Length: 188
Image (cartoon, rainbow, N blue to C red):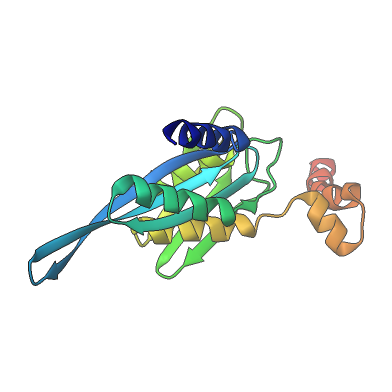
């Protein structure tokens, strides 16, 4: 019986090796009952493939490993795809909000690295972003910070997505951004 469980556990790991996960927060909670206190644990986990997909989940259980397992499963079910420029940074600056949590994320040149704090850093690392500057304003609650970060990332749009929505070509979208700069160079 034990050998069968080991085989099954090994097979599960082989099926999804593309996902990396990061434990962001673990919280011990207690419930006072007639005989004393009962402890439980709540875990917050971020999961991603480091190629543009990321998700987060929370799990509660009496034991820490079980809470982490539940959170990881939920995170895998709630993954979102985010378009990345050159697979390393965001296409444009974006803000995300959730409750009292507000985050500002800015695109960055090559070599900048991930300049972000705590839970936001975990999201960017699991997403596969290599260069980004981010700031959390407002709530310091890790749950709200992650939700605000994911909210902002959902607003991210690539030139291809914008062109498709407007019914134009990608070249037309990118030329318009460069046209004012070219006109300013001609005047100088």
